[in-house]
Length: 98
Image (cartoon, rainbow, N blue to C red):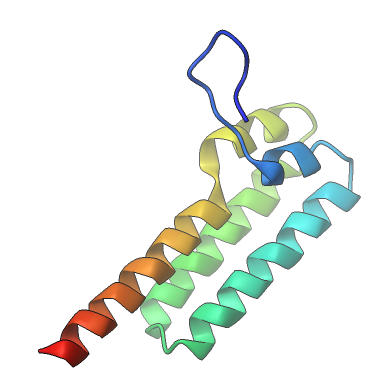
């Protein structure tokens, strides 16, 4: 989705985050699932820590009314964490093929 007339794009995380309390908890649940999948995939502890930090920043700042919702459009912690997981899995596949 995007803001009409601008290049600003946002996802379901940002839209659900607009619901006070419930929205932030719902997106935290999705974040936890991505983190769990990363752990199951054998992501190194250092990368898991970075993922937890992304989630913590999102939850902390995202809890601030209005400003937190605007921040969520920019930060996109789930997208950042999913990219890190994808990169790890791609590297793992490339290493196993060589």
